Length: 224
Ligand code: ATP
Ligand code: ZN
Image (tube, rainbow, N blue to C red; front, side, top):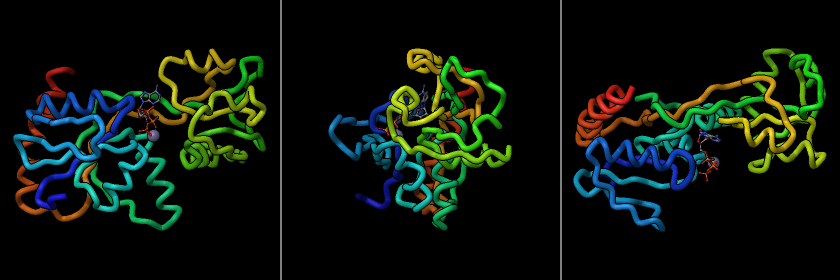
């Protein structure tokens, strides 16, 4: 990979990829996307797009492997807490909060359960992909729980007898309902953000960012 080219990490395929690609295109980038490729070259600017799993993006930025990244704040914050716990570097700058990827991280319990506040989760098993965000939230309320770590199918855990409740991303709530769950508490509100590594940038890369940012902000303002 050419180190003179600005490197931007974004989700390869998933809920953020279409909107992220569209945003970069609307800023004038001509992206040559071949579905199977990890790296996509921008034809009209010295930029490479790295297409990875969203979970890897904060780490790539914090380790300075890429210059910029687009990721959900939920994944960013969870990674930051996890890395802080492991005493790994956690530096990054938020360049711009974006207007897509909106979702919330919520607690949900079986529909038939009477909800009497988070204290009722004391000592209970909660399935989640976000153990650090959940621990921070419940610790603030003095609640101790048993984390059940799942990277997928979190919402089936209670019915499967693996957990008493879940903490998962919600947008419409239909998935929860289909699994006999009800949302009882929002613990984190998220949107996509553009972040930058804290590495010193050479003048060429900085100039590309200085060109892109006003375009990006103009685009976001126009569709407000
Ligand atoms: P990957 O294969 O890249 O790891 P993934 O399955 O972890 O993908 P997606 O489901 O594509 O991730 O979600 C990516 C991000 O999109 C989430 O982390 C979140 O920031 C955002 N998002 C927006 N709405 C939702 C939703 N309803 N459910 C889940 N994520 C959502
Ligand atoms: Zn992911």
